[in-house]
Length: 342
Image 1 (tube, rainbow, N blue to C red):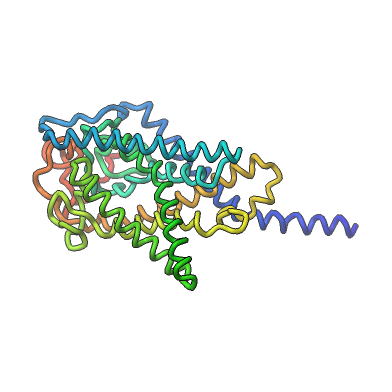
Image 2: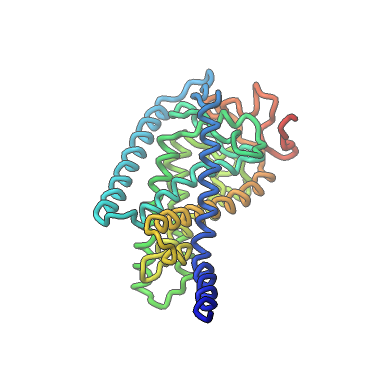
């Protein structure tokens, strides 16, 4: 009788200790199912087609950069994936970096979700694209977003490459900790954020915006660099997305002596090694999704107060999303939120 009572009391305690990894894994699994549903609806719909760039010609220098960026980003992505796969083969298991790379890639579907109420980015439709999955997200509001030409060989590649940034940031934090052993974890997180803010600005401003494939069309000018021009860069994006990147790097940096992140706590209580690996991966994916959801909620809030978009955008940037030739004004003061027709 006493043995039975003891076993009944131990089992629930073990399950509770396995709780964190299961909670995070449940979030990750739900996010994976939702994005698969969204992608499937998009691929099987008329929205899955190249966006018409319109009549305006693209300057030769922008055409040159289109080739350089798409080939360059894709090449680096292949190299990064090769490095991750090689390490998995060496260890004969899915490494933490492989799980983190999958988590980064799983964030791609939420990258433009900050356009939920109104568009604040424009992409160059001369880059390889098949429109956008955004209208297939349940509850989507902003109109004409099937015409957002998500550039697969740049944006899609970028998220696979982000594991490289996480590895480099961890190396930076180890260096800081070695030079200043008393540095607190909060200060280390601040260092990571600062490093990412600088990298984000340099990458977006000089590799993405000034080459002609991306524009932050909807920003608050007083809170942007180069505000009021096609080269404007919102400081809010630099701050909050850098915090997302720093948190992802921190997940890798602050692991226990078994190499496990806090979202994996309790994974050792899962009897099956294969199921434990799946739960661990989904938990890291769940953490990544939570970060992107918080980031998008914040950026959607900023989108309510943007200034008028700069003038002079060509047709291959506007892409029939708003402005001339559409029934929708581009975002700005006094411009309403266009709700879907019922």
